[in-house]
Image (cartoon, rainbow, N blue to C red):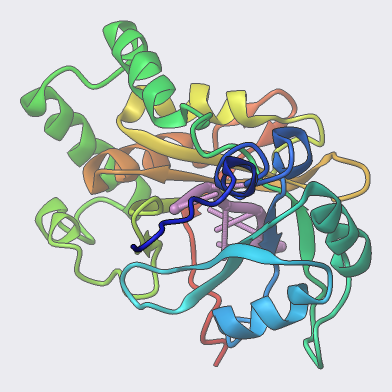
Length: 265
DNA sequence: TCGCATT
């Protein structure tokens, strides 16, 4: 007669349920944001760099959606929070291998708590347009033509040619998903300038998807310039034509499309 | 006087 021996239940329960992982506190927020990575560094190389500090659960390197090249930004999720803390201590501000620039390692933001910037953009625009924005296409085009003539010198370039985007090589049409649009360089901001002033200046001209005030890392003061990304060329051109030379406080702004800076002759 | 970057 065959006898079936049942294993004691006590052997089954621990690995299957309660002790599958340590308590959530020790594994929470073990996710790191890494920037300044060499563009040539692969995900595997990044993992090798971080693996000395603990067990890596997931990793990722963000790439430009158009070119596929690394954006120099990545994520490392460790098994435990303390491992992530040690990795920050050991790697933040360090130069990997023979890289020219040090990397930044910090705890990542929660992806679900997005900045809400795009949403705010639309909310702001819908209110700003009511009293300051372009009204409809005929009016907008009329004003754009005049402003372009003022900006470039009447009759030197026709608005048609500008609208055709001829002669715009090296100008700030940026690729990538979040960065799609026309990138505008704003110079001569005050050290106290913040993002809100850029929203207020450019928002009335149309769809603004991103603004950035560049600050000194240590003083946190504006370095005198910033960037604005606008979705539509006409609106960007209108903003530039209107705001270049605009006096903001004691300063006269210089506003133009961002230059590429990649191919420095 | 032309960047950051948040899966």
